[in-house]
Amino acid sequence: MIWQQLQSLAGSYPLALRGLGMTVVLSLISLVLGTLLGFGLGILRTGGNRLISGLIGAWVDLIRGTPFLVQIFLIFFILPEFGIELDAFTAGIIALTNLAACFICEIVVAGIRSVPTGQVEAALASGLSRWQRMRQVVLPQAMRIVLPPLVGQYVLLIKDSSVVSAIGLTDLTRVGWLVVQRVPNGLLVFFLVGVGYFIVCYPLIMLARRLERRMGAAHGEVQL
Amino acid sequence: MTKTGLTKTGMIDFRGVNKWFGSLNVLKDITLSVEPREVVVVCGPSGSGKSTLIRCVNGLETIKDGDLVVDGQRLGDPATNMTQLRTEIGFVFQAFNLYPHKTALENVTLAPIHVRKIPRAEAEKAGRELLAKVGLADKVNAYPAQLSGGQQQRVAIARCLGMRPKIMLFDEPTSALDPEMISEVLDVMVAVAEEGMTMMVVTHEMGFARKVAQRVVFMDAGAIVESGTPDEFFSHPKTDRSRAFLSKILRH
Image 1 (cartoon, each protein chain N blue to C red):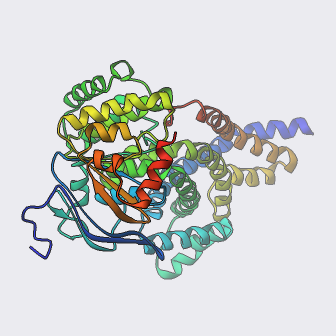
Image 2 (image 1 turned 180 degrees about the horizontal axis):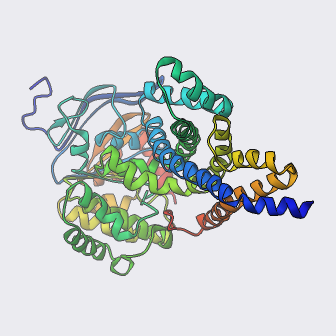
């Protein structure tokens, strides 16, 4: 019987590949967009404008304090009530990007705040503009603190992407649900789904660990 | 212009400057004028406001009232572009504050390239010359962590000189150094002074003050208590407070 199930599973591998592909594409796009947005928000949050900083802080707290499933439902099912129709893929990207940006924002803020004030004063005293100070002096040093948890956050993001199956996107998790209807062995099917996520995440976990070890050795800027 | 009357001022002009940290009056009614090419040494017990005084000059601290005019521009005036003014003022920190992720040469060339918009090759040539001038020709590609304190401070001075400033401010530049490294930094400062730089130096290095300073300003509790030539000040201090201070630092 297990032999039959395995044969049947083997037949579903194109579907599994599609699911894995969807998971990777979703994660990758929102990871890139979320990183850009997260850095932007982090820089604005530390920028000295109390109103902007407060607004970003409130938004980050809101997103961090509500379940991702609820956020994705709000975007996919509630926004259409206000006339904003989104397909599942776009809704998934928006929800994941927003989630990633909020967590990354906090990581970036912690990194920026870890740079000694003397560094900013030295840059200020030599006449560097606000952006030059950020780009040339603060961010390169903040990256020491930012990189390891940033990569860790990517792992969390990839795993969180499984929630998008709830709005009908055929990602790896949803493929599991589809297959298990034909092959009634949940343990086996979802074990394989887990393996799929692990294959994507493990290299990142290794990278995060490596970065953490390298931080002590670098002169302050990280060479990847 | 306004009451500052920009005619015939010094390079740095404090007029009735006051500053508070909360309820603490850290600068009390400071009036002090530093002429072009003049070297003024500021000394006094810790907490007397001397660091705060020079940090006001390039706007690292803001003043509450009074006027502070630097290179003809009034600080706090909306018409004064602080970023622009800071390019004319070098500031040497007690803790060096070199950029740890950049080499000695990159530390020196960063502002000239990005602020002065000098072409990289030209900036690097000038940077190498400056590092050679402070005795670090062989450390061009070293990172700050690979340099001793004295070497780091000399790079920091070269970093300021790279901007060709009109004024140099030194905030206890040798206080964080091991004793054997103090003279190498002071030698560089003497050379800078002898080239005619306008300088305000917070230091207790009496040898340096005697050698290059035209004036010593003694501060206590946020106020300028005494001011005179190094010889007058060290040999014939006029107030009890300066005598007490001198007896403490000269005992060692």
